[in-house]
Image 1 (cartoon, rainbow, N blue to C red):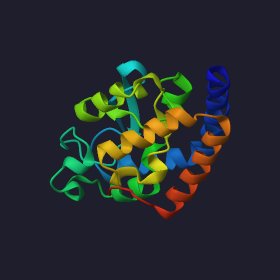
Image 2 (image 1 turned 45 degrees about the horizontal axis):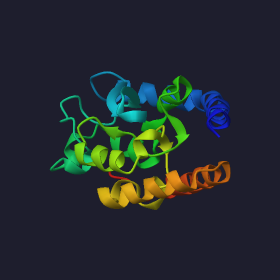
Image 3 (image 1 turned 60 degrees about the vertical axis):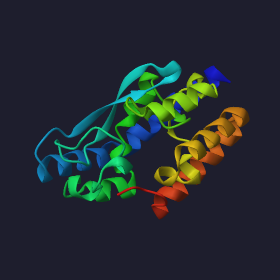
Image 4 (image 1 turned 120 degrees about the horizontal axis):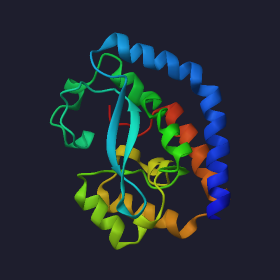
Amino acid sequence: MPWQKRLFDLLLGLSALLVLSLPGLIVALLVKFTSPGPVLYWSQRVGRHNQLFAMPKFRSMRTDTPVVATHLLSDPDAYLTPIGSLLRRTSLDELPQLWSILKGDMSIVGPRPALFNQHDLIAARTEHGIDALTPGLTGWAQVNGRDDLPIPVKVEFDRQYMDRQSFAFDLRIIWLTLLRVIRTDGVAH
């Protein structure tokens, strides 16, 4: 399935890029005009086989925000830009990750890439062989709790995905992702 999954990623990624280019441009302008700093935030993430890569997101946090997972900030809302909450709630901040998908650092579906300093998550995934998977824009853990999941539960969902990988399962996850994004389920604002 590897080359078929890559072909699917390229076709869906290019299609999404075409459809979402105008909304992406609008979001970029809103980010630029509502807070100082760059439009994109390049986050160091852990990819396949624990290789680091730079993953772009529309910047939803101030430039002085500590580089940690959002749930580890004492008051995440204090770091949001004026439109940061909207970007996160609607997942619009994730649009630039289409670049990572086209480049091959990410897939449409797979475990969400860990931050470079989430050592406990990286170690748990490595222990279960999940590090062999290409990280995804969405994944089985994402549709089952997103930011609300503790690490052991997240890793268990990632392991289940690894064991159940198929084109049909990926399509199910994409569908569930669309539903979750529309309802803004499990998003850390």
